Length: 261
Image (tube, rainbow, N blue to C red):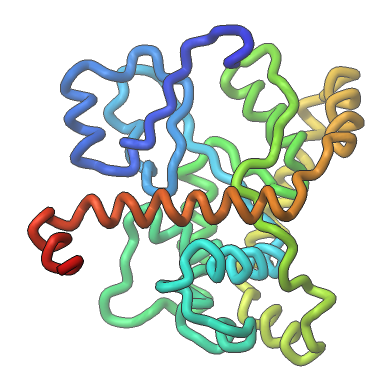
């Protein structure tokens, strides 16, 4: 898109409801192609153009290991777990499952008590089926890209590349058998959603009938050079600094001066 000079502004402001609405009042929205963020669930609802909500699921256990590895690097003051076992035994583990995050992003809350697995599964499944135009899979990333392009009527796209990728850390093979069994048990809701999504996704890909362009794209993807871990670490630490700077700027100047003195 950049190479072809297409206009497709990406607005992080969609993560902030107040800022997003102010921009919308000024008439923003007629030329949008993509809104990206963790909390932009409702950003499309007031747009004067057709839009679609998209998300991806990932194999649950590898995903939670990435949550652990990433959290320790990028959010060390909020993510205070020295071991994966400690993270697994905490209430935060369940709150960072895909099902829980899916409902949180949608604005769902459970004020009295956390939902049972049955309720969590049912509500997350309804959310995926009724609120998302496309649910892709990280493990089938190229297929997901092509389905997004078809949905958005984008005729061509360049090869994807890794951004903010976590350096190698704890992996499944490093987990003791008992820890792995406990983690898989704790991720039963996510695993059920992932299996169902995988089946639906496979049918969608088959019906799409991708041709030679896709096969060429899929063959070229593994040939992309992997970023060295040192570069991944630098990018993660850069993002950690960006968020720390934003937090610092939110503190009134007088309080910052008092802290320094």
